[in-house]
Image 1 (cartoon, rainbow, N blue to C red):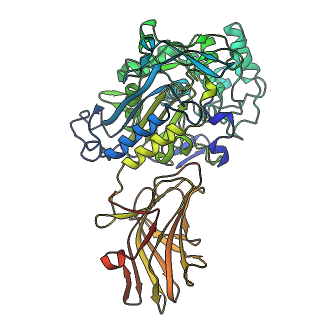
Image 2 (image 1 turned 90 degrees about the horizontal axis):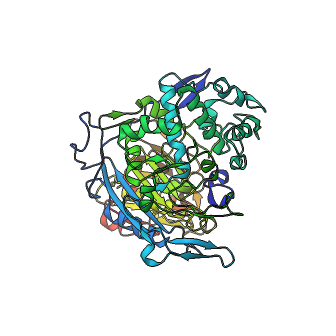
Image 3 (image 1 turned 120 degrees about the vertical axis):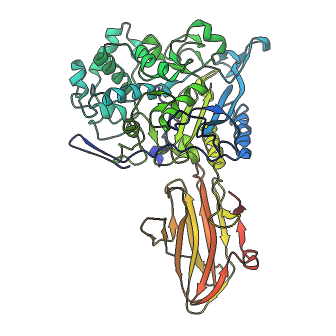
Length: 595
């Protein structure tokens, strides 16, 4: 089942380093996972790969105030969001390197016994029968399950049993009908096969009849011509995996992932003994559900997965926040956790590299979504990988900062119509991104734009006399939502009545300078300081300002400006390092931040 905001257009619809030529893959190496600042180097295996343990924010190299804010913001969504609670409860887990700095349950795992559609209200269990969230609460992961199927497929690619550019029909001859003969394994993994989002497999009474629905399904678009997220891709991949291995998907999950990584609370079809520790999902009844099942609790919520016996390539895995953190840490480590290796680094690279360069906004590795601000928030980078699940789950991995975030909520409890959008995920990701310090380029503070949406923050230098023109030099750090949010350098020679763009160049250490002729930057800069240089016109009272403008939806990590200095020939006209000059800067929305 898809997990998109309200079923309407997605943010990606509103809104690298891999080449496939003749089946040959040219890969850039995945950066090695680096331990967070101040991390205990003993917290890992003999080769220095971090393994997980609980620790302080400081040990993880994170700012504790922003982790506290992460919890505060998450708790707000237990109330009207805006009309109904976004979830009955959640488990939040965040960390960096080998340190889990936040592992916190909020709300209820089980609160409602039913949904009353006539009054649009929920029927609560008696207080003594409600169950609070706990750190080890088990969740139906919904579409986060797709990551496990994808890892199993990449393992088979690594072993030579599966060809990334191989045609699905070469493994499943019956699949090739209705125009699907050219669909490849890669297209299944990157949602470019042309399949529609889903079909009601549960309407077919037998397993063979369900397969016939897939065999007869025609693509909506020619394979490879469009991105369209579809559960059918991962269901088809499940069938391929089971065919080439001769083993059921649940057995593969256990032997290839959960047993080696000792993920003891991750599996399909959890036993009845797990039910008291499992978050309930929906009062599933028609017409909002495809099946009349009543309160779903301890069984898979997705109707198609349920009809397939609870084991499906697109949904059905149950897990805890800690187990998912182990999986995330394994991938950030390049496929290894402790003594167990489930993938080679080159295989992990396939999951963190964009194959969908032809479809901007729909970046996708093998199985993993990439660079999606609509739920990754300010953690999003071109290599940030993650996935969401319809039940209210999400996993985000940022190799750039070696950080990870897991938000597991029961947002379809009591009914799916109460939840809309992805605001709690975005808020959590923004707070974790802010918790990763950005050290000033010089001195103790730098000017920070903040991370507010729907704002225009300005940082204005005092009027400068530039008889023969001059040059601005400073340090600049930026990470914004591409195109939607931008930083502008502007000048005015008439006291701010009109403003003109000031072209500039930026250069990162060891890289060639980049020209910015429009006087603006947007998107991803590598989360590193750049040296900025701008030629300024001759003027007697020239005013310079930085203007940071954001839209109402999402933001990146923001903008930092430091060490501003303007010289006119051999004369220093303005130097932020001089207290008197710094005191004349006017900041609206910007703050002097230590990190």
